[in-house]
Length: 421
Ligand SMILES: [Zn+2]
Figure 1: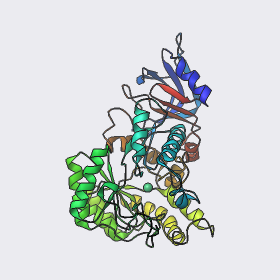
Figure 2: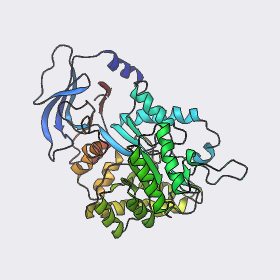
Figure 3: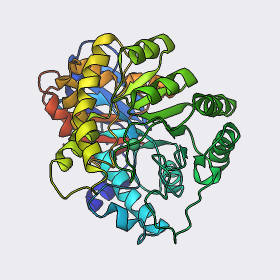
């Protein structure tokens, strides 16, 4: 891969012509057939019917047997870690540098699976902010990252980095470490994220599956604390994402004004009604639900305190997604990859379609819809003249076989072809 990448990057052609058997532009409801998309200087300069013959020095990407799509968005990833059996003990053995180097590997894997933009919803040591900066500077390959930095939690809550530690370890994290216990501290934690260079705010409104704590769904913020987070976030132009499994915590987060509910596992009818009234988005993370359930079925994979939570939450996520979609809750594509392995993000499409969402709508939920949410739609999220050449190709037709979204064969970003058929 390294050698191929260098070869592509070294020879800068006049234009890249992509011959697409099928083109899904991310906005319209129908696909076009037999199109040429022209990319020059990193931007789409023409979209034409038929296959344009290359001029001298032009590069041709032959995707006549496949489908061209806009670069994909995953609205919930964790690029600096990947859960495994040793995760808890690794926390005492790994240094910042280990996480940083891992994140470079996972970022490339994510890009090569077709995701050219991601929202990273939580790290521990600002490593995803450094990763974002390195990718933006062209130092390492990876997706555009909208990074939360450290998630904001409460004491003992999901994303308190010291849960389960013995007394002899220092375990009194502060708002600077992303742990708050009052309205004042909530404000301080948001301002700290601004100081560190975060792009968005993530809170853990309820218990979670993988933390060393008993409940996967109890409410862990007061509504006043959520409101303080959201109102302070607005001062700095931040949107707020809330991890939330439990019914009560979801409602407090929605009433408190957050923009997205992550997971939404035990969302009830009142919660659905509230989300629709407030225009709150659901980011379902079906991939993570499926993955924790599969590992939970193995007797020894998870710590004993985690296993029952994995078995309860995992299967419920997809049922709730189906219900929420049917009820008209707004949905954006997000996986929670870093729970499930990096590079498998595309499997979420199949789970969304299984949950009742038509393939074209699932594709929009991963392209034009998140681009608009993140105010990036003037640049990306659709295939149109003057948009950036952030493009992805899959074999076959995702509208008849959504599984092809897991087999990306072409990736272009920053005028560089990272993967070609
Ligand atoms: Zn997450």
